[in-house]
Length: 159
Image 1 (cartoon, rainbow, N blue to C red):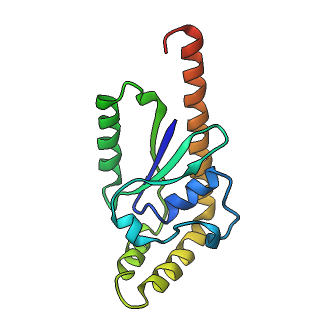
Image 2 (cartoon, rainbow, N blue to C red; image 1 turned 45 degrees about the vertical axis):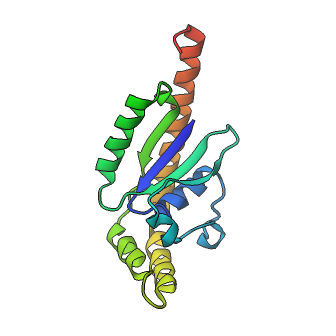
């Protein structure tokens, strides 16, 4: 199974949520590989974060303000182009203060911008950890539900 977590950024709150799902987050952003890497986010490609013990691959993707549009488009593409669309989960992580994350990302282009990006992002996301954790747990439940549905399909001979 592949899981794609969408957000305004692929290297801020979505990356924190992905690391929570992978049991890598220890309430400290410094241990998160590629955290606040705005140049990576600007490339526009899904960012592979890692795999869990079940072999499920977790990715993040920044979609700017158009998260809902991106989610619908990606879901539609997976339905059209993949016979195995049930092995994909496209979801999103939203936080209060996303505008501050977008501002922090934009500041990364100016001198001292990376430092400002990190400072603002840390301040915003520290307050959002409970919300991000709740969404990460919901995604984990969705992953489990999809795996159970697939297992039932296989047992009934319909998969």
